[in-house]
View 1 (cartoon, rainbow, N blue to C red):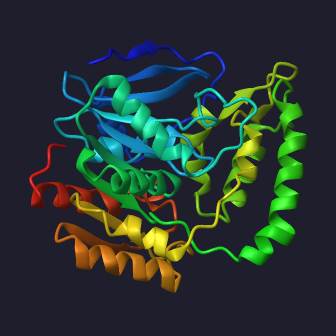
View 2 (view 1 turned 45 degrees about the vertical axis):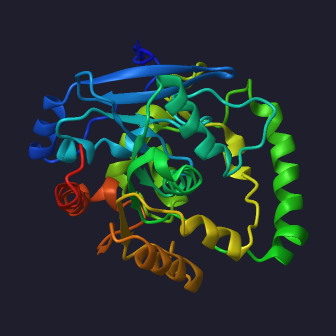
Length: 328
């Protein structure tokens, strides 16, 4: 198995105190962590490795415009015997950007395949949220024999799109903005105080990420300004805001979903607008019909319930792992 490359990241990361409870703080300090870099042709994929030992880690995949920090409150509560590798998708966190290319939803599962082949793993085990869950679903359906288990939080299929609106309004605007943002790659973006950037991030998610939770993302998602040490800017690739989502036929998505056969846990946040359409509900009903190892639970909280309220998610994950005797 290929070795992980360990690195240090301390010079340009915002120093922010953690608001975790004393119990969660104690858990966090008991679990060793290391920063890693996995080489790719365009640079590297970064990640945070939780735990130690020689066992193959579980892959933890974050949501759109988030980063590996999204798992900081939850992982100490659920990690057991196996390490957990929380990755930054390309363009996010500490990972390299993909130059000259448009991000799209089929690049996400391709990253999982790259990681699997790079480390020569037989199967992958997935802990995912939102965009990471969509990536996990696609990988688990295209390669159904290559996934040990799949835990998805609040989403795993893309919602339906109004194709007329996409063609007439959204695509022209996205392509223009993507073109303009290409010129921002080597420039420092607008800067903010930590208080401002925290509030902006909170509001940009429609308050899905609690103010006190933003700091977990800032550690990997903000850089200190070179011109003003009291200011910070978002370090993620600004082109991520202009991802081109390709509308896919309902029958195509259904064909994918019917191939999900590994043990799967889906946790749906009650205060989230995602996975609430008739289409999304129909897709998870198909999984339930097709897969006798599928488990579903509603969890009170926002789209980022795992980040804001990990104590609501952790017991369900532990129960699922024990029920199916999974290596976790």
